[in-house]
Image (cartoon, rainbow, N blue to C red; front, side, top):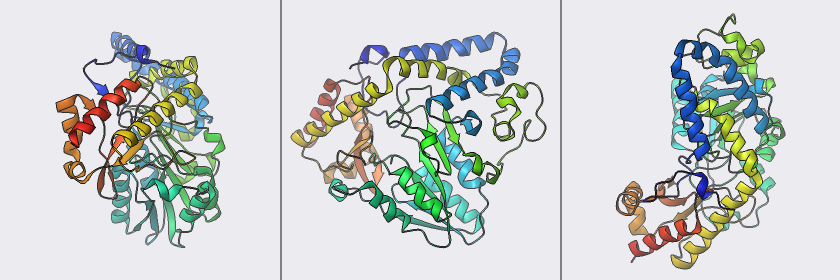
Length: 394
């Protein structure tokens, strides 16, 4: 299955970094532009009509991910969602926020900000970054190992569904069952999950708060994200901002969410560029037309091809988990010392000198090289990247 022709790609660039941003299919990009142009014909009328249209989109998002639309919050990016979750829960002074040592830097900073602002403790639990440490490990065992780190003072546990550095997929349902037993709020950064693996929020009933990006693996326009809050936790989330929908719901906001208090209070009520959200309709149409399971399979096929080729040509150690339940869409390798020392400059050199877009995130204070191919890629793209890396290592 190759969908290369569904995208308007730069022929001079080999783009293998969907883990940062995916490239939109042509149909989605065209819809995005069309919605913006239509809006500009009468911005005032368009703004007043936006809330009803946004509710239709939120309903589509909910349907695709198996959720009640009244449990969702739309935002421009997951950092906004995670700020709302981490800063919006009331917890006693002296309590602890727990997170793993593979979390995304911006989310780690939100936790640090909350801890320093409110006199809370902040602690990290270690997760391995070598493939062999996950060999033969049952998902339930990893969930229990993480849950065993919870202390009486722990009130919030922040984890990624898929780790941004190496693609580790946590056994989320198993972990959530453990945290709920212990009365700890589990906040999940799901930035890399939508579009890279099947996601059914209704099957994650023990998760307390979940955020997901749509402009990574979902191939959606930039600036589209969502948060999911089960009904049992909605009253626990304190508002971090106020506006038109904080109290009474009036026209034109009454066209959104059937006057549901939670969703209206968390509505984006200012003057936004709504075109990226309106184009989610075409995003889901693309996925339905090409079938999610086939897309997931193609991503995996490309990833396995990259893994085998790097092992054969470069012999680099895998920083991602082995193939199996812990393997996500991101494929990372430990770098030879000379390349690791280049850090972010390696990412820049690959792009500026060779027109190859890869990523060099940090794992445990050491840079790794990360492949994240998508359905617009071909095996030839991966072969070109590995060939350049082979030349760089001499």
